[in-house]
Length: 243
Image (cartoon, rainbow, N blue to C red; front, side):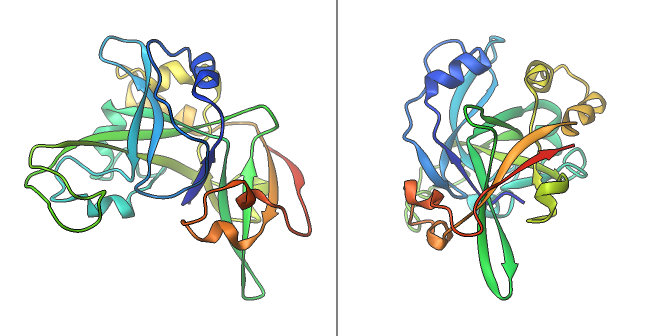
C-alpha cells in the first residue's frame, strides 16, 4: 500500500532524469501528498516524446459515474492490474511514471501507530510504476468538495500507483510497497506498443536501496504538509539494501 508520499525535487531535475520535452509544470515541494491531490506524472505524449502533466491521485475509470471511486483506487496491485476492470484498459494503453522523493508507511507497535518514511539514497528519486485514465464528467456538480465540483463534459485525468510485495527490509514495516522502475525500463514501460505480457519483468525490480526512518505523528494528518513531517524519532534511521 502507498497512501502518502512526498515530492521535493524541482521540475528541472525531473526534466533531466526523464528527458522531458517542452514546458514542465510548476509545483511546490510536497511533504505529505494525500489521495485526490493533483500531482505530476510522466507519460508519453501523442507526439511520441515524454511529457510531465498534473493529474489527480486516485484513478477514476472512464465508466465511473462520479469521482468518488478514486479514493479507493490510489493503488493498483501488480498481481491484478492487468485484469481488474478499473485498471485493465489503462495498464494496456495508458501507463505512467510517478516521481517521488519517498513515501510513508505505518506500523502498529504496542497499540501505537508508528509512521515511517521510506526514501531512496540521497540525491536519487523514486520512479513509481503507474497507470492513468481520462474521465468525462457526465453531469454538472455544484455542491460538495471543491475538488469534486465541475461542469458536465469536464475532462478529469487521474492516476494510480502500482504496488507489489515488499522487499525484505521494507516488509518489516508493511507487506507491500510501490513498484520502483529502473531507468532502462522507462521507455518500454511508457511505450503504448509494448505488449502487456512483456511488462511484468519491469514490475519486479531486482535491487532497490532505501532508508527507512521512523518519523513523528505530524504526518498522520493530511493538514500537515511541511518539513517537520520528516522529523525523525527514536530509534532513528536504518539503511537497507533490498534484493
